[in-house]
Amino acid sequence: MTLLTRIQDTSERLTASDRRIIEVLLGQQGEAVFLSAAQLAERAQVHETTATRLAQKLGFSGYPELRAQLQKEVMEGQDAAARMRRSVSKVADGSYLADVVQSEISALEQLTRSIDQRDVDIASDMIVAARRVFIFAQGHATSVSVFLQRRLDRFGMTTVMLTGRGRDIAERLTSLGAEDLVLVLAFRKQPTDYAALMGHAAQVGARSLLISDLAGPTMTPPAGHLLAAPRGRSGTEFQTPIVPMTIVNAILLTIAGRHEPQVVAKLEELARLFDRFA
Amino acid sequence: MTLLTRIQDTSERLTASDRRIIEVLLGQQGEAVFLSAAQLAERAQVHETTATRLAQKLGFSGYPELRAQLQKEVMEGQDAAARMRRSVSKVADGSYLADVVQSEISALEQLTRSIDQRDVDIASDMIVAARRVFIFAQGHATSVSVFLQRRLDRFGMTTVMLTGRGRDIAERLTSLGAEDLVLVLAFRKQPTDYAALMGHAAQVGARSLLISDLAGPTMTPPAGHLLAAPRGRSGTEFQTPIVPMTIVNAILLTIAGRHEPQVVAKLEELARLFDRFA
DNA sequence: GTTGACTTGCAGGATTTCCTGCACAATGGT
DNA sequence: ACCATTGTGCAGGAAATCCTGCAAGTCAAC
Image (cartoon, rainbow over all chains, first blue to last red; front, side, top):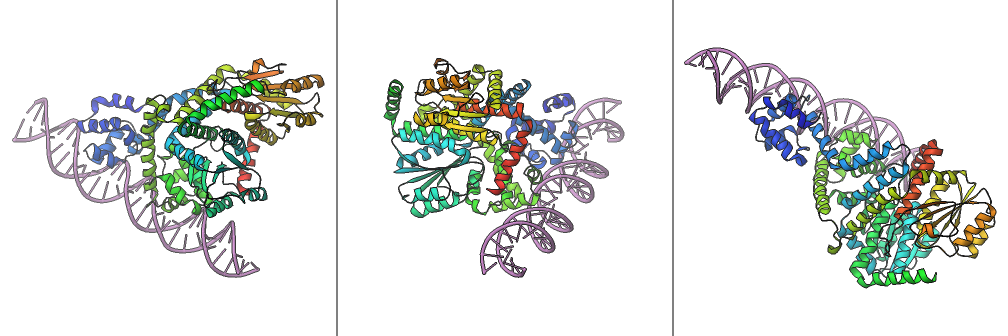
């Protein structure tokens, strides 16, 4: 039973004070969901008691129950569309494809909420300003790093891949200097060599950029700049690199658009040449 | 000061339990804003006390203050997302991120129209039935192949990567037999060695599977089974491997779901072990 | 003007939620 | 192996949030 229904069913028994509370409740839904009975009553200029009694009049056991109902409705209203699609995909039994597509889409929608274009701008500036870009990636992150490296190479940048373990990385790091950038791709949890890498970067004065998921903010020492967004299916093993891949892509497009407007045309010409020769 | 900032500033002092709470807090933001300390702790599988102490560690006077901050940010974020949606595409203003996300979403929506779950089923059956899977990928397709190979390995399958050129591939192909599967990832245009590879596969009786984009149907000789869907931004240089990556993911999920229902649980257990040890 | 039905406010108690001191466990270093 | 440090859980108390009995106020009907 929805809150609105309950109000309608009880409408003839509502007092003026009740109506003022309801007005706040529905008029400022977004904020009302967080308020305690006392806070709500204050906004409506009525006594706290009235709020409690209204809740009971509407058939709830008490005010907390009313608020929970409101929260539920607001939440569902937010992603009603998404929920609908999700349930549709579940109906088609065994349709893993539809399910995967659906969860990737929600993850991408979440992405614009987690990251601002300004953060992307900063990241692209850092990359463009760097003499060389050292790309650190392990495990599942390597697929993203492969993508990133190819693109940066095409932009004419110098990249160094740090994909091995321990010694392999150390050897390639000897030349790291203040003008270089360390770009880390890391998901789920902090990689073994992360701390050492960041420590070294800080020591030689190199800047650092971390592209990550929910684990990003917890990695230490913190990177110079962080781009983090939750990936879909959080908590399960079936996470994909699509969200970070899209972050990387946004960075690449920003570089092309902000710093090298002419580079795009060149790249496409190059691609056509490749098509003809290769 | 934003919650994320506080988390970063405190990152080096965070414990494993703290991180689990943060993961719930950020990963399930929408619901977390309503939870009491005890409820949040239960979701994160930690003791209530830890939640209280985390709040204090982050500089809040207590948990209620932390939750209030989260509520504030979620509310503001909603506004931002709504504003974003209103203005369709803001590339002109330099919002490349929104544009990228938008075009990826439409590409993914197109995907369900291009490929049927039955095609995915066939592909997974072929992979499961194979003794070994030879994965052929070049250029931008390698990022997808890296992803695919890691996952198949975890499933306990034997994979052979064919990522080099000419001779490199030929050498690894000598052992190809009738019980093996050749899985080709190729976009935009037919790769140089494609015809030779397919010819050899046909000769030894190996089955073949091609995952591709609009160029897929034009490749010759045709593969035994084809999964093809248009990628976003068709015609431009800025195409991403997200659509094929999602196809691959659908295949993997189908394998897990259809052929090895128990494998999922095992994988997640494995992941937890990794988290603990690595 | 009185009565009765109803609403509102207050005070105090009940319940939920939150914080903190203490003890135990785990970890890392000597 | 031992100690110091740090993290975790429990128990109890503090604080907030909420509910209810009672009294005062309002208003209309008689």
